[in-house]
Amino acid sequence: MLAPHTTCPGCQEEVFLDELVRGRCPLCGCTLEDFVDQSGEMDEIVERSDFSWLVFNYFIFKKFDDLGVNPLQVMQLITGLDECCLNPGPGEFPRTKFEFDIPMKLVDQVRPKKCSRCGRFFFRGGRKVLSGDLTIPGFEIRYICSREL
Image (cartoon, rainbow, N blue to C red; front, top):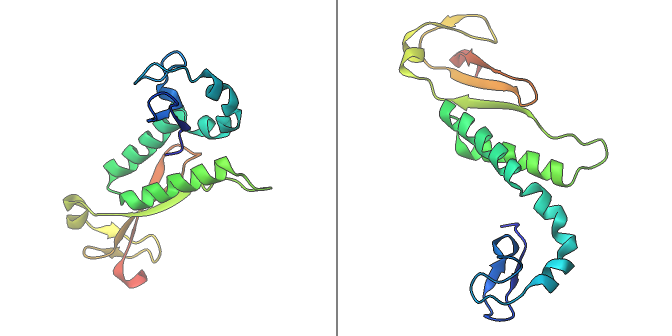
């Protein structure tokens, strides 16, 4: 975990700085204010691990998980956002475009679908693709027939 932590000089236990109670160890009450004052270099890490960033990541994950996207693919998208936002290179922008394969529901398997590549209608096989951009509201669902795979 990226949260800054230290070892308490009183009880020798690992204590995360966000768990401190008025600058004291929650286990033994030993004062850790001296260490908290020296932890200015940890501010960079704390900026991205704040509550709003965690909530943003949760809702992105939840939205795609509800649509049936593989959780590993969603985590790779979120990790790409985290890495690019934490260490931006010159002219580097976060990867906000996505394209995921999602499972077809029973309704999708029964009704005719039009292939987005060749324009033919098909009933069986194929893929259902969810694509879009995080900077633009909404997304697009396309179908691709087995011939175009």
